Image (cartoon, rainbow, N blue to C red; front, side, top):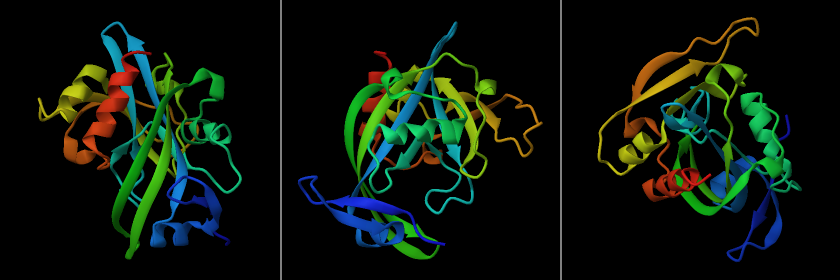
Length: 211
């Protein structure tokens, strides 16, 4: 099975070629990714949605992360990458429905499948105010273990380390398409999230308050 190819870039973000996914992460080549953060308004206030990564993911399995995100494959534009939202969450989205929240330079190292990785990304970040309940989403069970929402102000308090835990509601990916999602309550702590920089999380959260 052939590997997905990514466009790779130099320090000035000029394209210098393409490389297979494993090589990109083994050698730390700069590549592009798409992030979409979804928020919704409720009578209790504005909520933010997080996906829980499947336990089978090669990086950060089982941790909470961006609502929908993905790498840009070779030749793809950021506009093409909006497909990630429908693929992961089952909700069709157009780029003109999203609000740009700027770009983030992301860097992480670790191991995946016993191999060291260096992940260097320029992330194109978007916000989407979508007033749908959790049960309206159809999760891609191969990628997404669950979808959770919490009060946006509570999320800010958590990442500012003013509280140690926050309340959240969630649904799990259906194992069968005929299954209906059941909402349950839980609590989240900081250590359960993918270790992006707290400042990056907080920048996004505060921009989502403005949507």
